[in-house]
Image (cartoon, rainbow, N blue to C red; front, side, top):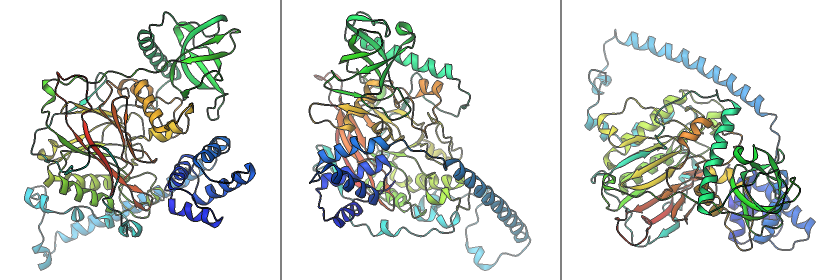
Length: 600
C-alpha cells in the first residue's frame, strides 16, 4: 500500500494543523501498518485528539493514538475475498481462451508466410532460428530497452508519469559506517569471488510437494524448536531445571514455553499465555501476568524462559524474562576466498510502478549496475507482482511465466557488460511462482554457459557466503508481519525495528512468528529444514514496506533497502562495501565498512 506524506500534510492542513517531519513519518508508518489511507488516518487522528482533549501533535500523542485506538480495531473481516477470487479466475479463463485463439492465428500466418517470397524489408532483418542463433556480439550489444517490450504483453503499456518526473533521483537517504569519500564502484567480474549457499544442513535447491502437512507434524516442529532453544538458554544462564507449568509453587519457578494469545485477536498485555514444552509441561497453557515486568518485548510464537510466582497453578506472575541468545558468527577459512574489499548492490521489487507495467524502474536500475559495476547484485522479488493492478485484473495478454522470463532475460543480458554476479531471490508475491514458504528457487533452464557462472538462483529465505561474509536474505516482509503482532514495554526509548531484528537473531529463525500472517502458507517440515539460521549472519537483508534503515544489531548489520517503487513513485535501493577481516585479530570486527540507501 503506497502512502503519500504530502497528502497527509495536506489533509491535516485542512484543519489548520502543522506537524514536524518526524510526526509525519510516524503517521505514514501507521497508515501502512494498519492499512489506512491518508484521508481516513487524518480524520481518525483529529477525532481522537478532540475526544481526548489533546492540543498538540507529538510522537507521544501518536503512540497513545496507536495503542488506545488503532490496535483495538486491527481485526477486520474479509468476507468479499472469496467472491473476488472467483471473479479473477473467471477473467483469467477468458484471457487464456483469447490467447489460445491468437496463437492459432499466428501459427497459420507463419505457415502461409513460409510459402511466399520474402519482401525487401524482411531480407535486411537478421533471421534467427535454432540452427542460426544470435551471436554473442549481437546479444550483448542490445540495450535493455530493446530486450524488454512491455507492449508485447500489455495493451496499455504507458510510461509512468509521476515516476518519470521525479527530481530526487540518486539522493542518499541514510548512511552507515564511513560512507564519506567512498567512490561506490566495484570491479564487476574482474576479481574472483567465492559464492556459496549455506544450508542447515543443506540448502533448498528445487521444488517439493506441499499441502500435505498434518497438524501433528506442525506440532512436532514447534516442539523441537522449543526444546532446542530451551536447552541453549538453560546452558547459557546455568538454569538447574525447568518447572512444570500447572504445578503450584510458593517459591519462584523457572518455566520454558512459547508465547501465545488467549483469543483470536491481536496480542496485548492481558491476553498473553505461555504454552509449555512437552517434556516438562505436556504442552499445557497458563495465563501470564506481566504487571511486575518493567521491560519486555513479546510476540506470538516466541520461545521464552520466564521466572515468576505460580501459587495457584492457574496464573504465572512473571518477574523475569531471560533474554535470547544468538548463534555464533561464521569463522572464515581458506576456502572462503580473497579478503579484498567488494561492493554489493541490493534491490527489492516491485520493479514497476502501480500505474504502469513498463518496468522503467528496472531499466534505470540496470543502468546504475552498468555504471557502478558492483561485484554482486542481490535482487529480491516480486519481479511480476501479484498485487499489481494489471495482474489482478488479468489485463496481460501473455502468460505470467512468459512475462517473468522476459524480465529475467532483460536483467541477465542487460547487465552482462558489467560482469556483476547476480543473486536472484524469489518472493511470495511473484505471481507465477510457487506460493509456499520456504520458497524454492526460480527455474531457468535456458541460461547461456557464460551466464551460468555469474547468475545464482536461490531460495527464499537463503543464507549466502560471499568471500566468507555471511548474508541472511529474505524477501518476506518480516518487519511488517512481526511489527503488527509484537507488544512491548520499556522504561526508556525503544526502537521497534531493533527489537524485531533482535528477536529474529535470538530466535534463530527467518520467520519466528506463529501463527503466521494470513497470506503466509508455511510448510513446517521444510520450514524446519530450510528456514533456520545456521549461524548469525554478518549482514541481514530484510526488505519491507516500512521505512528504510541500516542498523547494527548484536554485531549483525541489518539493512532494509526499501522497495524500488512505492506506488506510483520511485523508491530506494541499498549498496554496501564489505571486507572480510583476517583471522588472528583482537575480537571480531564487522565486515561492513560502509552502507547507504539511495533513491532510484
